[in-house]
Length: 252
Image (cartoon, rainbow, N blue to C red; front, side, top):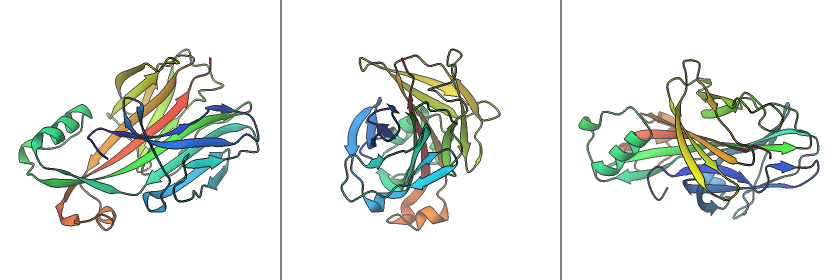
């Protein structure tokens, strides 16, 4: 994570494919819905899978693969690609960057009591929706530490009143959380809008035909013991962030 507030997402080459077509998707790290492609490394991926209906298919990449993900769905439906990254850490040496990050992501932290330097552990929990064939089907919760669930199918349902999403943390609705939406036009222009989940963890995102979307939300918490076991110099880790991301497209 070379800079603060860098998102991580799964970027399918195509969001609409036919049955039997190969679906490829990159791991991307960056800002404003643009960034650098990351290769597959086993020690960086805790879990990767593709869900199609009731079936959940593990994805096993190969060292250095770019694109990181390749799957070939044999039936029509809504293909849900998910990945959880292993925890990593970064160091904050002065207040400015951490305070800017906390403010930008609308997170709850006692900034006056914070001492420096310290480490933050972070992990990524990404999902992408791809239409296969007629794409009749629905997204569902897949057990990630934090995740978005699309309550409507963006490829087959009426999107005139927006797309309804549910934000989960540890399997429960995450209420009153900031949700950042990156909308990319066919020309590549990006518009960023902030929303807030309601008391049931839901939010409705206005969407436009022909556009691609990245939806992002961050949990800030004190580090969990299982996280500290997996990062270097755990005694210096004072905070942990869990990043949820969802990517999808709206057909023309």
